[in-house]
Image (cartoon, rainbow over all chains, first blue to last red; front, side, top):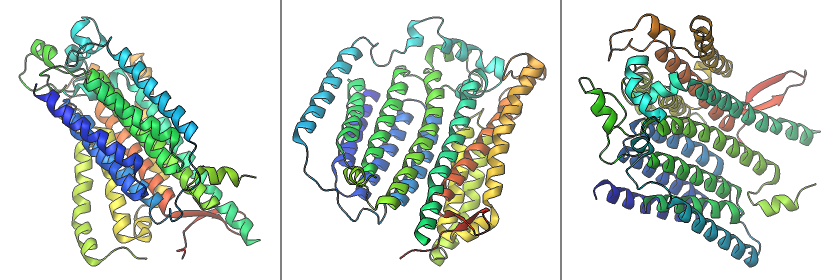
Length: 185
Length: 115
Length: 160
């Protein structure tokens, strides 16, 4: 059993945190529950032998919490109101349950947990990376050697997306100036 | 079993995105879905009793090849996490801007006030 | 508003250096240990966010202006692209690890992996500057059009 039991407990914790984050009325509690999910996910990555991911996740979660709390604090004084569309809610529930059933059916075709594709397929790309990574790139961390040598083109795309996100935030918040100017007139 | 629980997390995020009326709640649902997908990709690469994909000094290469977890999903998920932060931040900027214009986070109110 | 209480300011004064150094350590040992440009960049951005939250926005913007942030962001992306084109020019392949092929270093040392170290630094610079810029744009600054038509960034006046 071992690690599967730990993962099971951790995933139940994540699901409970997600339910609280979705259903609670107070926005600040919701954001803090999201932070709990992120830190739990970081521990899950440590269990799954992915220390790089754990470091990145914990740092990103801190930054995301700062942003979200800055966006929500002191803002939502007016609670959302209006009647609930029961028919729409029923349709959404049916859709999500059907989606889950479909996904559960599809997951049965996967390998059992703990047997990755690289152990079944001999000439998978990851096997080559693991065997030749240290010799070809000189990097002891195979994840870094994939990220910045074998598949560095993906990383270039990531840099572009981040640049676009900065430009998008700047362009969206630039509109503040225009509305303020119109108000002054 | 573990895959199914991970999928439950995804479905919760989907439900939140579809039914909630608060924009920040929708952003939270999107983030939960993103976490679930990242976790699922890393779960796929786990090997029973595996070691982290970092070569230690003096370890035999064949033994490392037989025991390490799959490094490829991890490398792609690192990129995905940082991109997710950028996308979520853009969504938060949109939320702040909408609040400044309409004074509320409620999407039905915002739709009514249009035009 | 000029930051938080004196306790927070004193703790921040000691702590910010260590957070910054930890980020640099994560970046430059990214090819030997867990970490890399992404994690280190986010941690460096965190140190600047801590400084902004504790001391107020004027203090941080005096030390790292918005224009400098833009330049750091662009130079990180440019450095990464230069590494790629350098590989294309001398190795024939985009992102070819030329330094490692020509001058392989001793394994498990800092200079063992050629262009990966440079790429890590470029990515770290890029991520740190981007997140710092987003934080400043989202929370601190307001862009207004001043009277002569030129755009200028001023600090958001406190409302309510």
